[in-house]
Length: 363
Image 1 (spheres, rainbow, N blue to C red):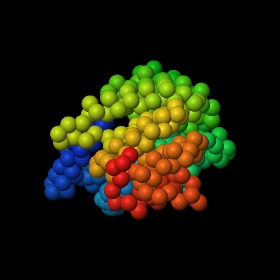
Image 2 (image 1 turned 45 degrees about the vertical axis):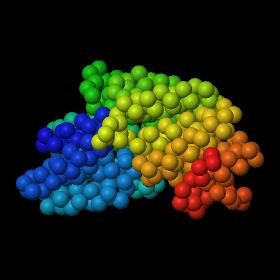
Image 3 (image 1 turned 180 degrees about the vertical axis):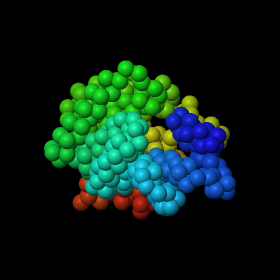
Image 4 (image 1 turned 30 degrees about the vertical axis):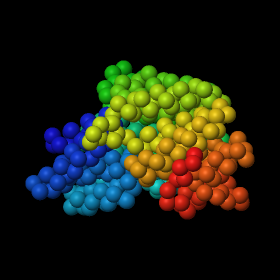
């Protein structure tokens, strides 16, 4: 349990390499000692969540499957409650995979199980129900935008109005309920920050998105929390056309992320990839195309970010669509090779990168 608690704390602090080592130890010790199935499932589920946050979706799928397998022999209602706990975490994995419908249905069923268990056992399930509603709102919003829940995030200018409207209504209820909480521990503060991030990203009006991002930043105490909140604020400022402010936020986020890194710790690489994407988009928005391409070249040269390179290229391509120029095209072709003129820029950049094993150094 000490190893699990250590891993959980390191995860919250954004020290993902240390968190993975501790959770590996917790899972191994629990298995060797034949710990109760619920305990093993909890450890596996938390490691799966860490894998999801790192972008390691195959490993996350395996751990969620193993967690549910451990719970197969636990009788109901305890078994159903614990399976719902795992499924609640796995719903975010489904969102990361772009399987929005599976997430929506799972979250709905989990809420039913939590409410039933609470009524039968006399326990307070309000936190789990509120968290489930938040994630249901996120699922509807992401489906509306057709955006999988993994960093670096990209936001289309428009989406399905019905899904986005449902997300906004659910999020409004969540934020109102959180605002009525007189005593908020770390868990509720984390939930409020998560809700504000979601509300910022999914907001129909950019000004509302900025306001929510600023509120989330006020609740961010640690470097990893500040970095993520700054990225959401940078994204909100980009939607408002404030390239200067977006770039400043992205650079401040980079400093926070750098403080997490060390000889044996790389920190939150997915967030780093998003921070770099935001800084590139801000540079393009400010008319600094040459600098944007240089930032892209530096990002592609980082081996640790290789799992995120395709999404970084997509985010760059999306920003490029609004300000494409022959000069920028030539600079990108020096970096990546020929770009197919029949493809949209996000697809052309990814396709070109796949065709070149090494970025050209002229850029």
